[in-house]
Length: 96
Image 1 (tube, one colour):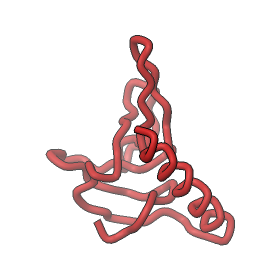
Image 2 (cartoon, one colour; image 1 turned 135 degrees about the vertical axis):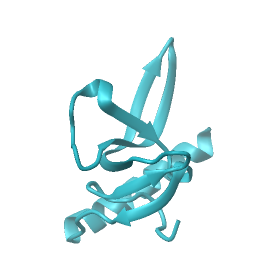
Image 3 (cartoon, one colour; image 1 turned 90 degrees about the vertical axis):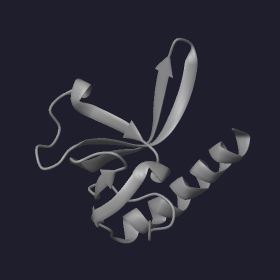
Image 4 (cartoon, helix red, strand yellow; image 1 turned 120 degrees about the horizontal axis):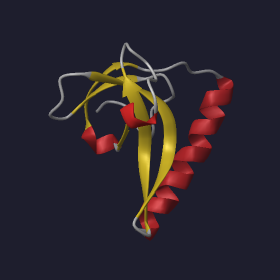
């Protein structure tokens, strides 16, 4: 992957062992299952269909991204957010 840190919302990617693209709709998503908490880098929905309900969303990490098709919208607010969220992710990974 040619992008450092977390991708912005709206990015379109292909996950490893997948044939359907996914659009990122959430960053650092928390999943709680059977008293176990997992933090995922992203939540995403099918592209180009978009959000079709919670049962059609995917949780995945940077290392599962095989190809980036499009990087989501970036402006000053997103760049500031990226600096903060990349730091949060780094802190979470160091505690894991």
